[in-house]
Amino acid sequence: MHAMVLNKPRTPLQWTESPDRRPGPGQIRVKVLACGVCRTDLHVLDGELPHPNSPIIPGHEIVGRIDALGEGVAGMALGQRVGIPWLGHTCGVCPYCRAQRENLCDAPLFTGYTRDGGFANATIADARFAFPLGETGEDASLAPLLCAGLIGWRSLKIAGDGKKLGLYGFGAAGHIVAQIARWQRREVYAFTRPGDAKGQDFARSLGVVWAGGSDEAPPQPLDAAIIYATAGELVPAALRAIRKGGRVVCAGIHMSDIPSFPYEILWEERQILSVANLTRADGVEFLGLVPQMGLVVKTTTYPLQQANQALADLRAGRFEGAAVLLP
Ligand SMILES: [Zn+2]
Ligand SMILES: [Zn+2]
Image (cartoon, rainbow, N blue to C red; front, side, top):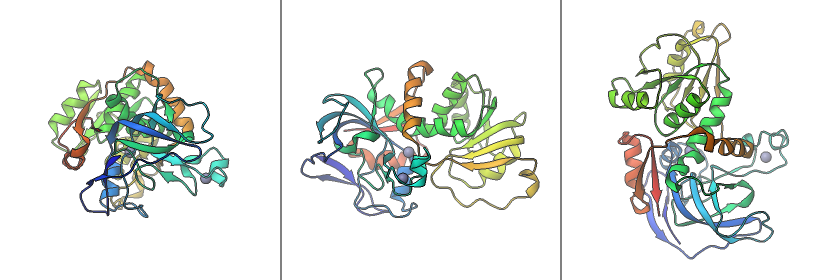
């Protein structure tokens, strides 16, 4: 197999060839067809998350086909197309796992962070954490749904069912969630970097009712706001944009420090919450609804060898939508 490997944080990924791996008991080996590039990959690269395994193969938005089955894998077949998400393994016995909150498991493994991921032509996954994808939809368009879509779905649920929804950051997740929210008959208000007219036009092209800079106030108070960008100063900005009793949901895995803010913008039962990871139930629910949603996922594809370029372009905001690597 070959892969783009992170040997240690803050160094470029390196093309590496290694012997094919065999799936262990309960595992599948998947031939990777496409793997999305997520902002979390940048956090792994930059050493902003604690305790990464390195060397590690990043990538946790994997679409592939099973090409080897480990002992004891039931209900999956060779050649089947599957999706492999960020949540790669949970312990099943901790209080969170027992309470159907496996996204908060005390001893998890995360794909592309603490176990090898999909910036490769093949990967090994715990079969219980892979989602059957069926044959509808293109590989590259499905890949970003495995994290941007899925975490987006979870963050939408946590935001509650208010009609007026703000999205701060309009990248891979934002552009998918805007479409899901429209499908749910919500009004979406998109906040981009101040002055990003192109990003605001892109948001309008997806049917948002308003697009502006994150330094602007929406035309009316919002029921909830979800923050996908990594800038902590967006938390007080979003608090100022929501109504009494509204919610601000922080959907990223890492954020710069949140500046202090006057209590009055939190007062009146406004809430700040974060979203961590996903459960398998989220995945089954979301992927089951995707065929009805009519999502148009905007992708920019790169050959696997150009993973460093894709990451640099993501960092610099040089494309709209999501980047996807093709092995
Ligand atoms: Zn991700
Ligand atoms: Zn657990």
